[in-house]
Image 1 (cartoon, rainbow over the protein chains, first blue to last red):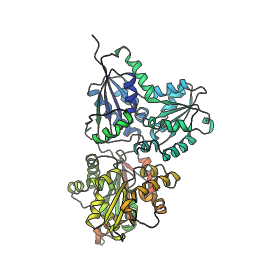
Image 2 (image 1 turned 120 degrees about the horizontal axis):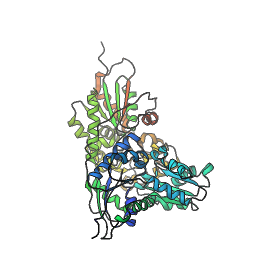
Image 3 (image 1 turned 120 degrees about the vertical axis):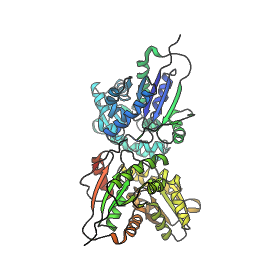
Image 4 (image 1 turned 180 degrees about the vertical axis):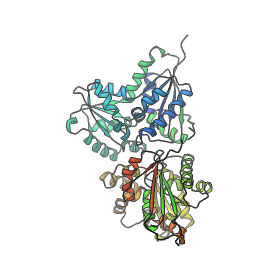
Length: 266
Length: 266
């Protein structure tokens, strides 16, 4: 008899975490997933640690109550500011996106110089810098607050995004980090502009923390992984379910049939 | 004996409404103001009517409880989606930014063709279109979701903002509205890029709803206005008070000495 499929909960402030779900469903296809987008309170990336931790704990507990056996914090900001609080506040195992991203970056870098781009809050927390330092890697972090709105405007391939990327990357790959050989996408929206970034910095290896996190989850699940058919996916949002469904497909790369509205009793 | 100074409450999702406070303090200097920025839940402009109304009512009731005798909804999105719910939910008089903006636009337009730019939610509500229609004016509304993040990045005068403005304005002044002679700034962030917009459309009259609203409030106050010294201002925010203070000065055009943190018990 095969064991039951694991149920994995993921949350993000909005749709970006769907890039983590996409990577996860490809590495661990035989699991059930519940994705929670806190769209009524997004973005997290420009807000304070107290506010983000409060929101993140709400979302995490909701997923635990729904029966998730493992929680993936599919958001760099929530991982950076609140991973410890979430881990302490839940009984199930919790995986963040930063540790796996840092490990992949450390492996990929030859000269041990890495550039990390992310939201204001992620960069201000220096969570990537600390994680990379432990692995013997120096890093330069750069906040890129316009990338999320540009992706959400549907301008992933647009001359304006190109220009903004050039400005941000010039500031990121500067001084001692001019020759950094790895660029970490420290925000789950950024995989959608990966080709723009790679075009401007063709010699660097781009590390997508969504992919690294998916591999970390697979390793943690180990023998729990069964082979009884494709994964089931449920979607929840705290704001408009219609908007989530419509825009979410761009991030997930597949159709989203139904989204359930959740009111966190604010 | 002079009557006591009126106490006016204003709220917005964030800092944009400070442009309304700035205009108001100049037209009605002898009042006390309480400004409430719902920064933990910003932005409102990309969210659903249900969510925005829920948030807006929280903010409005908080100001009423603090003793405001009049409430200014210093946010186009909250006015567009929730003015009726706020007016019904409060005992004090409520003034929104859309009606005054529409009236100023109708007065300024010779050919009765007006372009309105605003957030996604404001435009989707067609609140400006309805208000202008009643005044015999045709309008074309265009959502400009990148303007707020560009202003918040500090790029009000920047080649990227210039390029984005050109793209949005080309789409706004199109078809039958190619010869529209008034542009309404239907978002409280936009006064900070007024000069960029005017440069691209030198022949149009730009209507800033902050200024029109200030005049509407003054008219409503009438004889209540006294002359016993400069206005007092209190500031409140639901997220980081430090960030509010630091960035708010750009919108208000004067120093902000203290900001109080408010937890709306979410």
